[in-house]
Image (tube, rainbow, N blue to C red; front, side, top):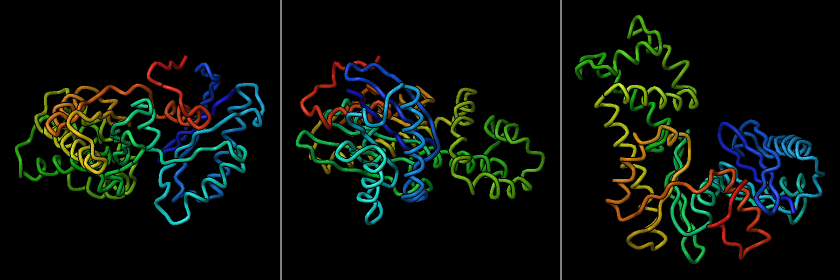
Length: 314
């Protein structure tokens, strides 16, 4: 049997193919797959090209795919989007073979091995998705990158606001001010306002990339950078708690995480652990990344009783 996973996000789409023993046969990366921006035809083209490429790498025919698990941003957020995405996926991969959900579902499936709990996603935007032991699901957040507290875009805005305050004299100038100016080669702070609005703030992906600068500033000993990470952790833990409350989860509910923010490591994970525990949860290191969550989703579609806790991806 061959299983296809498709993890589609706001900036990239990962295709991954494995057999029933967990042997990875092929990987392929493509562009973004947001339904709200690409529409049905955009998703169709993305899938056709991706499926053709990954089958070519693995040396199999499309018809040999047993089951596919796919996750898309914006899934279910527009009337008719679920039916439209399902239709396109079945046309490309095969009727009765596709299992579709939101990209946040894949984060949960991978990080917790499809077991009850909450997954925090923080990338360009942020969202929490969870499932309880009865199969009931809930979400919190995901309202859009610019208002998704704890997202990389939100962090980029917080960092720039801190720079602006130090530039204006509202706060004392620190290493944050110097490193921010050096990063953007700023010679005149006021003139940078135009550059900021035209080239950075107008592009969510550029805002989100500022999380990497924040980590550098944090490692240089900035107290403000530490405060920003602490604020992000509090917001993300609050969102996880809200999803847990909807699902009736009790003290000690499981929480895991996925997304670009967590590539920064301990500077966000340590405060997140404290904040999650403060709200009654327990933070777990992710078992698998979201693209492997897509594979587990595909397998679960034809092997519903399979326990993925001891499953290994090779």
